[in-house]
Image (cartoon, rainbow, N blue to C red; front, side, top):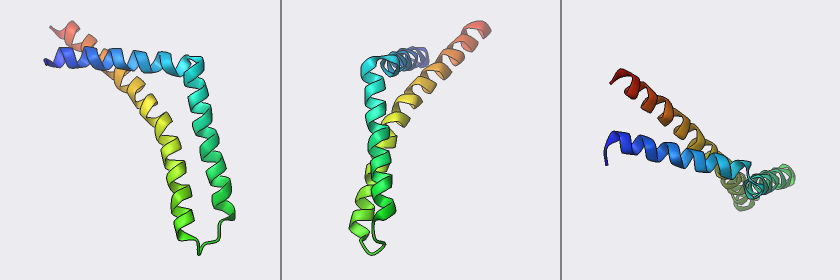
Length: 93
């Protein structure tokens, strides 16, 4: 796969991620992930420091919930960057 093909693929994937984030399903998924993180943080605040296994479990819930949003926003960002690089290469060549 050429660099141009990779840029186009990243741009297309980024556009799909953007459309997904703007869709009802995407907004619902992000909302659920945010809610899950908030609930885990609330539980973490009242968990005894001696309950290390519970603390680790709650921290992991927060991380996973945030990853969902992070992955999708990174795909959008990577796609936008790929478009810019593609345009620069096209204008220079």
